[in-house]
Image: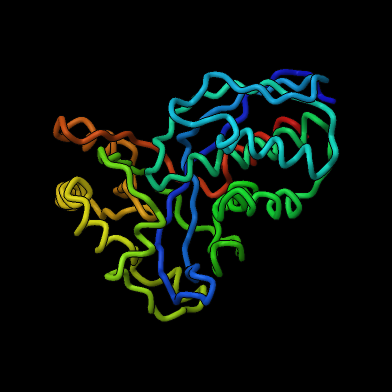
Length: 284
């Protein structure tokens, strides 16, 4: 058991494009999407112990412990490996919930990766990713830790290296339910499946954006304002929106002059996640 206390990053992701290529008989949708990480993170400070218990502070308002993805990830790992060790986890929550940045999935993935280290379980990334799918479709990409095209329901990953620009991320004041977006009858579900070469060279769009814009005026207002200044689109099923810049100064300048109703921050896109960086450069 590694007993040192370590502060682990749980980074956000962006979907730089998101295409829905069909609906499966089980109700899930087949996708082609490009995941890239950003330097904006939640942090989990973890110390292992011999109690067998998983304790988390602070509590997340309105989320019972058994529903907390961090707790569920830790218990899943204990059960899978019959591990009798425990851990105390302090959560520093910086990512908005329900914004399409993958915060909950990232917290779960960081829990799996970190406890695999602290408890010295020596599970492979493939095994951790397979466990992660039980917690959410986006968990494997955070375990994988490299920018990737995801296909199927998001489980087939191919590493790629898109440009790593600067982003202004806007957080509209609404919560969007992913299942509701995928149930929406106006959602485009028949985008033609493309080769990876075509996907990387075409102009990038998000098939979920038109129906979300139609149903959530806050998202429409945010996108329309930002489009005056920079290429802008929604990530995932929303509500967060990102504008792309070559230089950090330009992103920061727009953040400074944005209207008071626009809640935003600036960050950099990265193809190797901060979690993977920590694991390979500082803990190896």
